[in-house]
Image (tube, rainbow, N blue to C red; front, side):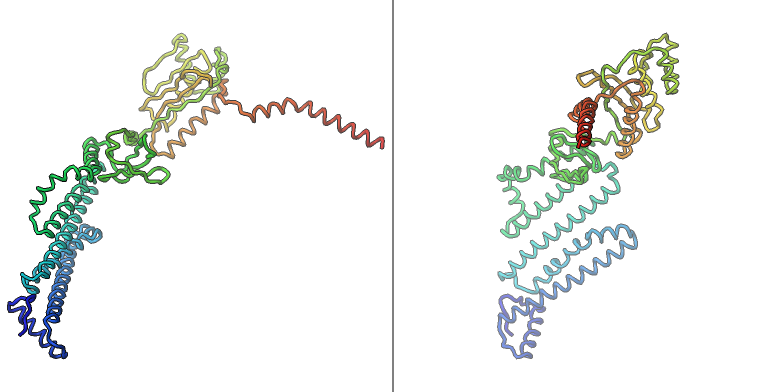
Length: 450
């Protein structure tokens, strides 16, 4: 019986080799050491792969059915995220490693190469399985327990990065046939290089922990980063980037540490409060602000009954203003049309069901300038929804524009070139009409003479 240095000498190997001899004799091939080794290796490796594939599928199907019976939701999630597939990939290389002593002798070069290759492959698929399980656990925690949507994905990215770093070190140790501990001790000399390579990851981890610990940022928050074009909803927070979907559906990514080192505006407080601020001014022409008398005030009360209570209160106080320091109060005066208009707008805001009476309501005169007298309306809507907020704000200032002329107030509007042209044409229209009429008369007289 011909034996090769590659093939082991135990009974299983010799039994398989004898069958290989019979097959070669049956098909009429010449007995050759290389041919025997190739056929022997193919049978062992193919059988190991087949057994590993069968065992892997049996384990995967069995675990899947068990989970679907005990916890159907968990089973479907494990299957949907391919966790079982990644875990079962570890079985085939383990089976091949178990069959490896039946294939080669320990002294052969092929055995050493194949063994190290299988160990490296096993290490990689094992790391993939661990990362898959870790990611699944994080996703379950993020969906079930992370009710505040804290940015904890950076922790997952850190764990995955550490696992792959350890995997690479183990693979290098297998290739050079050295202990991983010795390689780890030798990494101290490359600490500075590693700090540069993983600078963003380290800064991102620290920033993510600070953002999470201080509850400064969550997925779903509306933030504005002044130093960038970011103005939208946070859709993802990872180890190296924060993804923000702007209102025009563009995606902006900023490093997490830039949010810590700089500043950003988070609108979550506004959304949690249930109300949103309106702070906008309308400018009136200075000469339209005039003093008023009781007769004019009484005529305005007849037109706008909501002013009656305020006017009676001021007159009962001897005409002196009653400055109420409350949040939602009517403040104004009876001295000028602008003062009465302030009181009217305060009362109108208080009576408006879309304006929050639990927040500050102010109608105040700002510092006059060359563009007129600014009247600022400061209040909060009873909703934070963008469409409703803009509709309420638009309706408010439309009412201001329509109502102000009733009080004799003119809204400032800077003249444009088209306004001057219109005025000039209006001034010249009578003279132009006379000229055209005179020319037409002359033409008619000439036609009559002809």
